[in-house]
Amino acid sequence: MAGLSAMDDWFRQTGSGARFDWGPVGAERLAADVACLVVVDVLSFTTSVTVAVESGTRVFPYAWRDASASEFAEARGARLAVGRRMATAASPWSLSPAALRDAPYVPRLVLPSPNGSSIAAAAGESVVVAGCLRNASAVARWLAQEGYGTLDRPVAVIASGERWPDGSLRPALEDLLGAGAVLAALRKRHGGPLSPEAAAAADCLEATPDVMGAVAAGASGRELRDGGFARDVDIATEPDVCEAVPLLLDGAFTAAHGTR
Image 1: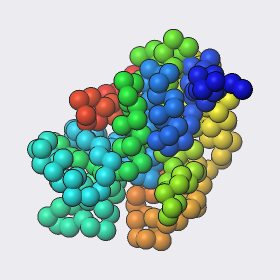
Image 2 (image 1 turned 45 degrees about the horizontal axis):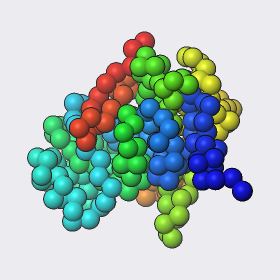
Image 3 (image 1 turned 90 degrees about the horizontal axis):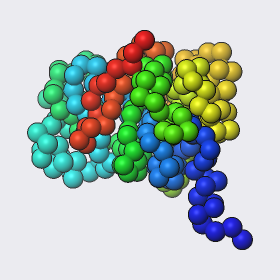
Image 4 (image 1 turned 180 degrees about the horizontal axis):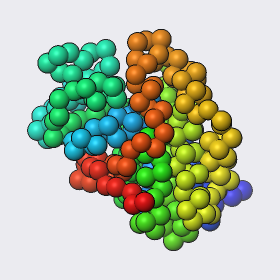
């Protein structure tokens, strides 16, 4: 019977410069063997992060949406983003990209997200970047520029997914496509080599003729549109409009930029 260390090698997709997996558990597995981890949560954590850092805001990820989030924000002199339906005129910052685009500028913002923040926390010593459909090419350029995605400095792209009511992972189409967009752009730059999992995610993106339509018609997109948040889906599916590469530094995402 193979030992645990050998099994870890299989699940870590060793021998590949670019790798792909799902959720916090996948991030934790791969983080031990990569130099950089890209978090992808298209609807809507990483999309919201790009919108915020574009305006110069530092975004502190936080894994819990409870009373401790207020204490966390207060300790950092930051505003606290609330749930989409809890936003008010006095507290307009939420996980909604549209609300963040319309809200007044703040220098520091705490953005609670059980999925995206948990993945960032699972990265350990790895460099952490926030990716989505809006900045996929910029992220790939930055990775290549920094030497990530090679055998010497492997990168893991983690699709966040959603949660079923019992807390188990629900793979989400939009995150598969967002991760695939980063991986496809990276593959065009220096090839990787990509693991079979990463190559399949990139192939899925390239085989989807209408990515915006697929995300809008998918389960998560329908949920938001039917709930009155169609603008969030529209912003999340803006292809490659953002040059900001949110980099996690000292506990907060801050904008770096991919070079053309």
